[in-house]
Length: 118
Image (cartoon, rainbow, N blue to C red; front, side, top):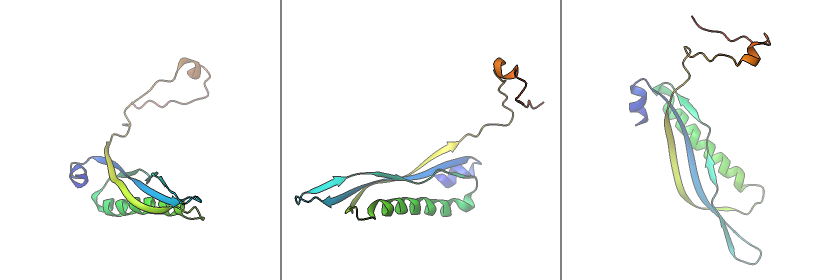
C-alpha cells in the first residue's frame, strides 16, 4: 500500500506504534502487569528508495524504547506483544502559493516581514 501511494507521486508520513504487555513479580509474590505503548518518530517518505530503511529504523526505535524501559533494575519482563502497527497517512504539505495576511496589530508595528508571492 505504501509503495502504491508513493508510486502515485504522493508524500507519505509513517510511524510504528506497539502495545506490549510487561509483567513483574511483586514482593508479595503476585504478578503485576502493565501495557505501555512505544512508538517511533514520524518519517516523511518522498521516494520509494528509502522506505525499507525507514521502516527498519522505526521498528528499531520501538525496540530501543522497550529496552530502555526494561533496564535499570525495574524488574519488568516482556510478556507479549499485544498490538504492533505501522501507521501511514498521506502528507499534504503547505503549498508555497498560500498567503496569510498579518493581523493588523502586528502589521502596524512594522517589525515583521510577510512576503507575498506575486
